Image (cartoon, rainbow, N blue to C red):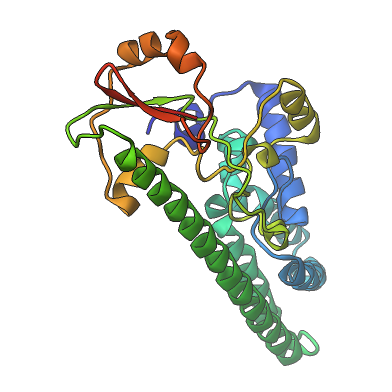
Amino acid sequence: MTTYAGLSSWGITGVSGYLARIAEAYKAFFVLGISPNRTYIFTAGAKNIAYLIIVIAIYLTYKKFVYLRKISKGSAWQFLIAVAALPLCVNLTIIMTDPKSVSPLHLLTYIMWVVFVLQRAEAIPGLTGKDFFRKTIIVLLMLSSFIMAKHDNTCYMKLEVCQTQAISYFTTLITRIKSVEGYKDELPVAYINAYDKQDATIPYIKEYDNLTAVYPYRIADLLSTPEKTALMKSGYSDHGYLINNYAWIYFMKIWCGYEPQLVEKGDRLKLETLPEIRNMPQYPDDGSIKIIDGVVVVKF
């Protein structure tokens, strides 16, 4: 866990790095997300509502500043400095770690500025239309919650579809392995090219492309355009992020109930050099699963 999502690099950077992160924290506050890895806390519809609430917050901040200036200029400027620090408080994670490691869960602190807006509407003596602002903000938050709930349900639907597809793929793989001629339950299994599975029949559902809160079907879709172009030119082919996920063997164990004995890495590397295995077709083609020297060989 020490290297997960920037956990081991919290606070480790130079002065220029902190300045860049502070700038990114302010930018993220107003664009409502981190652009490098497309991490956003709001959907498109809820984002417009959030912008409207920010405009209201700016107006209420101005009214509070004007009110405080009549009492004490020092207090007014202290208040303004405190408000200016709000984006840094909300996006402290961005300052403490690499923005590329920030996930949507890290952005849940955005709720604090919503609380700030509601508090501003209550804390300005003599504010004209105070009740109107309070009710408007509450209605906007309710509408935003409805939009986000609808989006969440769609994301869960995508997750359900993706998981069902992955379970179907690995169930078929298990059936093919156990159906190979000469198969015995005690035979070890060797996966060749385990993270380069290809299957032209895996469906690509374009309607789910905009749901970036859930990983896309292809690993290449996680990369920027230059990185993706370079990867494709190198001959890389990824027909499904789900079936090539780093935890696919564990996924197969949990969801398909299949946990065979795997050959050691050294023995697998020796098998890969055998001409018979090098000439095998790639799964799911016929002949891509064979028993060689007492080992069930699956070549992806």
